[in-house]
Image 1 (cartoon, rainbow, N blue to C red):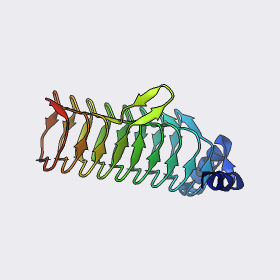
Image 2 (tube, rainbow, N blue to C red):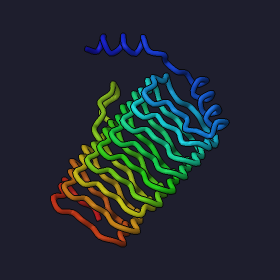
Image 3 (cartoon, helix red, strand yellow):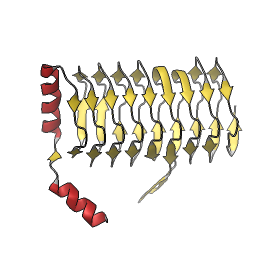
Length: 230
């Protein structure tokens, strides 16, 4: 099965960074979405750039890492059902639309540290190995982690626990209903201006809430954790 999948990828065109940059420029000129849906891409490495149009990697396969540092996205960023075989980094970037990562699969951690998202961050049913880093994010809409799975990652150096980091984040609402976190959930210093839904959320290790502020409704029916530090 694996050999067949590898052979299929080899037969498909694999886009490099130059092809990615050309499509982004062509989309800007034509005022359309930069479309990488269903494409196979070697890796993405773009920093300190402004992208004016929506950008879609729906159902794309990225063989290496995805790296957008200090990038400004003026429209939606779509990775719905994409597969990322390495790290996914959007740190210190600004997204003026939605971040759509429903059913995404990430092999070595998703890091949004310090990102600003003016609408919603949707990671419903995402499967992320390693960790989900959202320290100091600002999300003016909702973070949706419904039925997401943050799993431990085994590599040659050991085990990277499937932790979720939301320290000092500012968010309107968070939905974690039915989420599975194999590590710890760290929400120390978070401010949630609306609601937090943790119905049936399962945390295998520690739930950290020290200094957190939740101004709206809190739903915790069926919440499971090993230990709580508040």
